[in-house]
Image 1: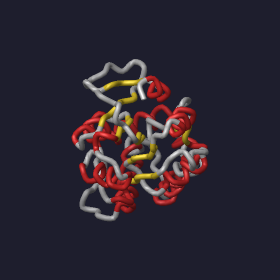
Image 2 (image 1 turned 120 degrees about the vertical axis):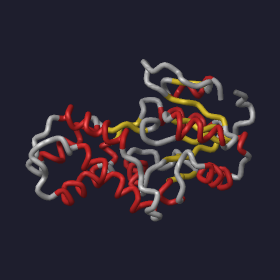
Image 3 (image 1 turned 180 degrees about the vertical axis):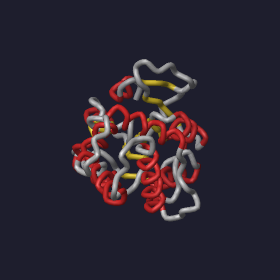
Length: 231
C-alpha cells in the first residue's frame, strides 16, 4: 500500500475514535433503572450485540435522521425483547437512551486519538471524520475536545448515503478537493470502512482488537498512534 501521495486522513467514529463508556450494556442499565427496570448489564450487552447483528436500517426511509431514529428504536426494542418485565413507556425510555448517547461523557476517545490527529495536522495532513451516524456525533465531538481536530465532519444522515456506498466516499473526496489516491481512511469495519474505501480508490487501514486475526490484505493497526509510523 503506497502512502507517499496521501494528503488527507479520514476516520470512522464509533469503535475507531470513540468507544461507548463504560459499555453499551452498562449505559442501558443506568438509564433503564431510572424507568424502574433492573436488567443485568451483561444481558443488555448480549441483547444489544444480537440486535446489532440482525437488524438493518430501513432504506425506504429517505430522511437520514428519521432512518437513524427508526434503526436505533428497533435495536433497543430487540435488545430487551427477551427480558421481563417490559417497559410501560418504551417511547420515553428510548428517548432517554437516544439522548444519553449524544453526551460526550458516554464516549471515551481511543487513548492515542487526540495526539495522533494533532501530529497528523502538524505534518500538513487534512483530517476528517467519516461516519455512519447522525447529528448527535457533532455534540460528542465538541464535548470530547475534538472540535478543532477535524477539517470536516462527514455524517451519513446529513449526506444521504452511508459507507460502503461509493456516493459518500465521492462526496467526501470532492469536498476535500483531492483525488481518491490522496486519501487514507481508517476504520474498524471490514465491509463499511475498508472495502468501501478501497472500492472508491482510497487507501485504507483497519483498526482492530488485539486478539483479532487480520482477515484482509490491508494494513492493520491496534492503536491509532501506529499511523504515525508510516505517514
